[in-house]
Amino acid sequence: MAAVPLVDSHCHLHMLDAGPDHPETYLDRARERGIGHFLTVSVDIDSAPDLLALTDAYPQITTSVGVHPCGRELREVAPEELAAMADHPRVLAIGETGLDAQCADADDRDWQIQRFRRQVRAAHLAGKPLIIHSRGAPADTARILEEERADLVGGIIHCFTDDMAAAERYLDLGFHISLSGILTFRQAAALREVAAGLPRSCLLVETDCPYLAPVPHRGKQNQPAWVREVAECLAQVRGESLEQVAAYTTENFYRLFPQAPAPDPDAVL
Ligand SMILES: [Zn+2]
Ligand SMILES: [Zn+2]
Image 1 (cartoon, rainbow, N blue to C red):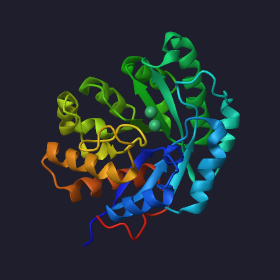
Image 2: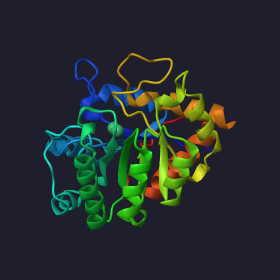
Image 3: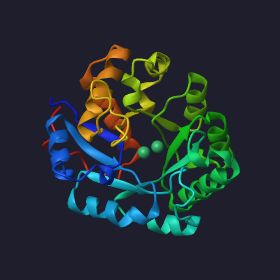
């Protein structure tokens, strides 16, 4: 049986520099390396038309609507308006939203929390899962998700970097844990240990490109083809094959997002 292709469950295709490497070039490279689907994630509402245009142009791309926790200047959206924007077959989720203790806006945690709560409410109205960005704030992120009953919609903790106790709290909420290129970084031994101990049924892989290029590409602009390096690292730390990691991470993605179009049939791992 042919191997199942990988899914890049969190990327920002519209942020890749255009130049000679326009989206098609990136998508071709990713296809050659067995990546069959790309969830390209919103960070601000004003780029929603660009993201929807990508989903129109390429059947293997889906998107989300949401406002990133960093960027106080980004336009706020009421839960009702955000839920209405999510009412589109290629918009799979609300986000990315959450808390970030390290960006310039972090001195006002209450403001970040209000933006976060509005988007959890939008997810309830839309009946769609959440994409969560949490950096340096696992306790508050989990607490808000619990208080806002995010367990009823579920979702993804993207670019997970916290400890096993944090992961278990997210798993209790029914959330998935998505691992990025950070998993491959030399200093990320503790994260690799957590990744080795998590149940298969919660795991996803992502690039978060153009950020966080994995080893051996550090310092370059990340691209969706390199989700394969993340999956290879995950396979190594868990004592599994790349094909096994692809099979269960892709199955997890389609269980969470059953309406997502099937992977590109030409993507062969
Ligand atoms: Zn993020
Ligand atoms: Zn992101």
